[in-house]
Amino acid sequence: MRPFPTLLLAAACAGTVACAPTLMKLPGAGGPTASDARDVLSDATAVCRGVHTLSAEIAVSGSVNAQRLRGRLLVGVATPASARIEAVAPAGQPIFIFVARDADATLLLPRDQRVLEHGAPDAVLEAVTGISLDGAQLRRVLSGCPQAPDPDSARAPSADWRIVRDGADDIYLHRLNGGASWQTAAMLHRPGDPSGWRAEYRDYQQGLPRIVRLVSGTSGRFDLQLTLSQLDVNTTLSDEVFHIEVPQTADRITIDELRKVGPLARQSVREN
Image (cartoon, helix red, strand yellow):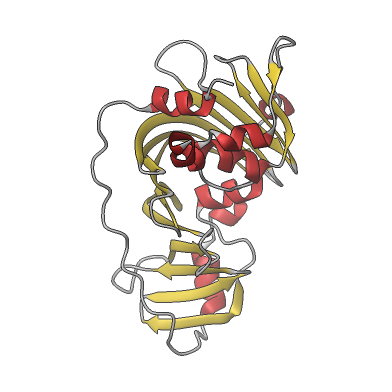
């Protein structure tokens, strides 16, 4: 079988990618209990907790498995767990189209006439991009919104930082100079777990971030910067957005076939 995801990444690469900025310096996890946690969370999530649909054009730069890449995505997400990602090519058909509704995902590779159907969304997205996210998690990551933060867990390491547990994650909330609104500065997804990742948020406009940086817990797996533009919130996204008309001539592939030549398997493919 021709290694289609390898070609996918090659098609997305264009020139060189500038070195990523230094990761945000986060405070230590200690500090007294934050008695103002509920107010801080209410302020920080005032906009994002009202996001039911989100669509954007996203410029992507960085690296996956130490290979640099640059590309452009058209993304739409909707509650509770629907997502669409289209990797746009400079000309012609998209490089790939990914759609997910709840626990069911489809990935179409139009140029290769191959399709993966009825996969687990997080597994399919990880195989093709390196990042394990389902539809609900993708909306959360793009909006910088905690899912179910526990205010009783909040710590105040300094006057302008709060750290809150959100399930197995750590949410870092920050404000500038003691007077600005609180914002989500970073999410640490399953801290200490090699399969975890870190999301950092910058350039907030109208309560939502325009720059999201995603870095894997294991060095070298992925380090990506997502720059959002043409952002639309709570516009109607029809059911057709999250559906793909699969050509009858498309060859069916499995998740195992996708994983064997996906970004995280590139080194093993070269060695074999």
